[in-house]
Length: 295
Image (cartoon, rainbow, N blue to C red; front, side):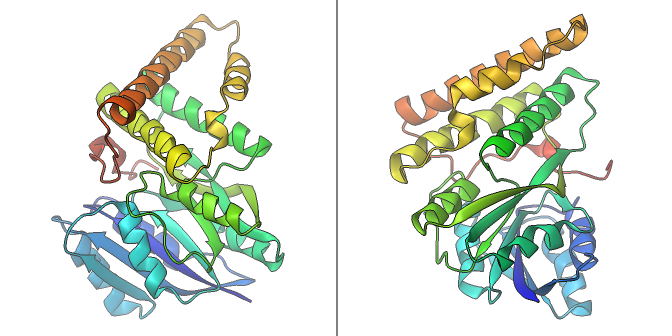
């Protein structure tokens, strides 16, 4: 039996935290034991803390840590790392929901001592019928295909309890953990059937806000931890994107729209980091990504 600790990180997640905790406490487990669920709430001003306390009163495995000041997700993860007791640590954002067997599938591979980190497959609940919904679904589909080539892990990851802390100002926490696992000469594994549901932006403003922050974060990662994720491989991205085109003119128009938004987002991220010298470790929230009730 592999013992794990689950860390959930929240900032004003009242719309999703209840169904997330229900999903976390009702996992199908055989070879894995969830020893504890630690929720770090970073200065939430809504009902997040109240909801977590209700769950904690009925389940002794749930612990709420309140961070008085919001210092970014990486700072919240460091609080979890100091408390967690599991042999394997699982971290998940408060705006996601794991499928019933996701933790089992993500943690079981650690029976192999060479495995240092695993990641599940994020699946957006957005409808691909709208232009923005199509863009969100396409990007996560490309993420999946890239991860099959070389593991790129995000949204929900598991790793051995040997990471004592990550850079507090890292805007890309999972990738920072990947860099540390690499330094320990351990392997990463992408688990495509370990599903974690998320929600992408529903408007252009939130989409660009998210994409520019992520690209800015990867520029920071390359410079500060000398680590480059597979999504920065332009040749691979272009090759996979070209394969998305078909004889469907409407679909092709949506692909071109997605490419335009991604290029613009990356330019803005480059501008933020290189010109404005901005490190978005405490990012502006994309409000349209916070409610997964449509799942």
